[in-house]
Amino acid sequence: MTKPIIEVKDLAKNFGKNQVLKDITEQVTPGQVIVVIGPSGSGKSTFLRCLNLLETPTSGEVDFAGENLTTLDTKRVNELREQMGMVFQSFNLFPNMTVLENIKLAPMKVKHVDDATATKRAHELLKQVNLDDHADAFPASLSGGQAQRVAIARSLAMDPKVMLFDEPTSALDPEMVGEVLSVMQQLAEQGMTMVVVTHEMGFAKSVADRVWFMADGYIQENSTPDDFFSNPQTERAQDFLSKIL
Ligand code: ADP
Ligand code: MG
Image (cartoon, rainbow, N blue to C red):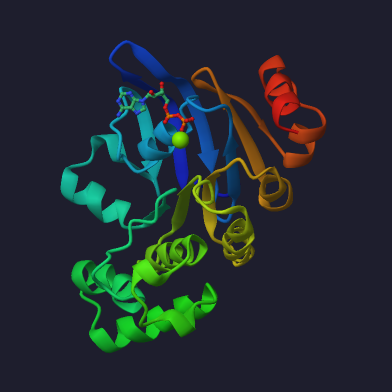
């Protein structure tokens, strides 16, 4: 069996008395695309943030590439975190830098990649997200869909082993959702390991290897998309699907 790249064991997370994640044990293997779906407030973002220790688990373990993040010092956690790209609902591009500079910044600062190499790679990534003609634009001049594609390119510039997406299209006007999803789909086809929180059921159906349905602090179902959408096992999932489909 392939070794998992992410392994979550008995993960729990409380905010005060609010038990958001109760007991989660799951694995992600290299190349897998996991789509996490579930009602608002069910802990999807918290779960994603626990995977790279942006949130500290209350108990349990998160292993990344064979190392238990919860036992490591900050320096090592930061090194490993660089290998996990994260894309949020809001793009958070640096407004005072061009698109190209946004993408080059982390590789040059953090990995000490030289300017020429970083520039070449940034152009390649911009081609990949269909924005090479916007290399010298500033973020304020971009549409939401373009900005999100730059944010994806910027994450990819660090050559992550895994990409985490937290509702990457939720803040976009409807006509821009497709261009971002298609970039994500291409990335999946290239073999990137991805954990994607999204409400885009079409994306889940066509791109996910597994759907994880989260509710009430648990991953209630871990299924293929076919099984999940045609034959959800739990009442919680049946209820959720009846409301959205
Ligand atoms: P989802 O992404 O599924 O909508 P979240 O993970 O954002 O859910 O939130 C799950 C629960 O955890 C909610 O009740 C939310 O209020 C709570 N929560 C999330 N982040 C924090 C925080 N930093 N401090 C306190 N409560 C939080
Ligand atoms: Mg969320």
